Length: 257
Length: 66
Image (cartoon, rainbow over all chains, first blue to last red; front, side, top):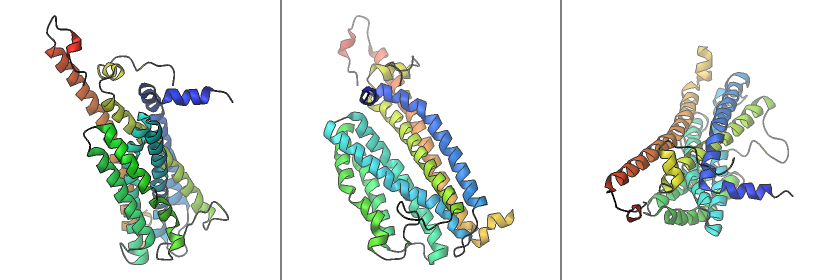
């Protein structure tokens, strides 16, 4: 295999190169996310028919389910980055893990809020201590705990290492959230989209859902890159490339990336 | 059109849910952009302070880089 892939990844681990790379990707990721999100909302709100059981209330699915997927997906990425950061002590991996936490917390909060707004008309209650709801709430508290622990240290890297351990410990909750609807048969419905076997959803409702899933993934890339850029400015503040950047000098050098 | 906004009587729930989604993500988009600008401004201020402290004839190595 060509050796440019590991070489490229190695170079991308350098903060000035990543800063430039993230800055180049950011507008494309955000623009595509908004475009796909708009298409998905058009499909979900105008094209897809009302549900035979839930009427129009089911349309909350088009933001609730993609947000719930992101709350778990971001935790997965954060766990991987935290592990890499702890084992190989790569500063950029620690930054990616720590800057993922607020985005994951945002999507978890959206999931809980939209789920509540869906539960009131359908179940007759804003909240119930159902297994899925409770484990998702625990996920939010884990995200907030990671953010809090990271910021409670004077030294950023020390805080990142401590919080990275919490990320790894908290990862046990992710499969609990995912399988909770199978393990405990309670109020929350089971999975609608299945990788194996047919999904329990009509194609006219499936495509906006999958499009919104793509949009939220792209949004995560945009938000993460924006956050990592902001973080690198502070953590690399003493370095020459940041000083040049602050004084409006040329963009950080280091090859094309 | 009003039938569309009514959403079969579920309008308030649906539109509140979508508003939550967009407001949270809008804040999440704007916050890091503001933080990056603030961090750059802090660094410019720090560089200016170091320049002010520097006396003629004093080597730059006397100063902390932090």
